[in-house]
Amino acid sequence: GEDVEQSLFLSVREGDSSVINCTYTDSSSTYLYWYKQEPGAGLQLLTYIFSNMDMKQDQRLTVLLNKKDKHLSLRIADTQTGDSAIYFCAESNNNQGGKLIFGQGTELSVKP
Amino acid sequence: DAMVIQNPRYQVTQFGKPVTLSCSQTLNHNVMYWYQQKSSQAPKLLFHYYDKDFNNEADTPDNFQSRRPNTSFCFLDIRSPGLGDAAMYLCATSRGSAWEQYFGPGTRLTVT
Image 1 (cartoon, each protein chain N blue to C red):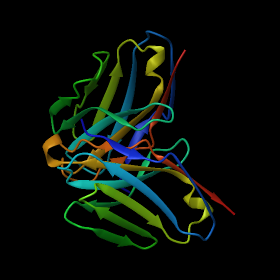
Image 2 (image 1 turned 60 degrees about the horizontal axis):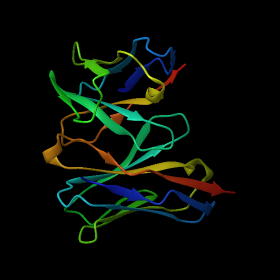
Image 3 (image 1 turned 90 degrees about the vertical axis):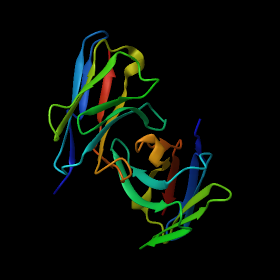
Image 4 (image 1 turned 30 degrees about the horizontal axis):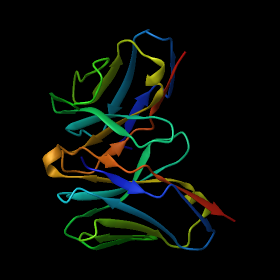
């Protein structure tokens, strides 16, 4: 079946850039998403990219997609302590009725 | 603000005692989803409604059922909760199956 994998932890200093990586196996993925989850809270949609794009930028966030390698990354510029959270990569395709397949989540810790 | 609301935020139930979790939305979205997220794990889709059409995931236990009486509301019923059902339950909505999903804050269920 489909699988999405992420590294579990990332620690950065405030002001540095963070790069969170994700790999997926479903070659028919249509959309790829990044969600943020703060402790005890629901998931906040940060950004998404269509599979026919290779890059999307939204303020401090840059998403890069390498479809050949099935690799997705999220870069957060000028990381702040408020960015500390768990970041989930997810994929979906039109054949699955919008079902999201999530990675395990990457816990980002930002140190002052 | 248009949003996805879940009630209650925290629910404690006894082993085997039926429990109902509630989700409502003001986004007027066609699709409503229920995900289960156990501690330190990725959210896992239980089922979803596309309008009135119910779509159950193959591995969702029979113990879990859902109702959608109208566009705005969707309920998750757990008929006989076991200790293994303790989790965060997340409701999400989307305009259609190919659109991004917006999540509520979740209900944390404890089974004693």
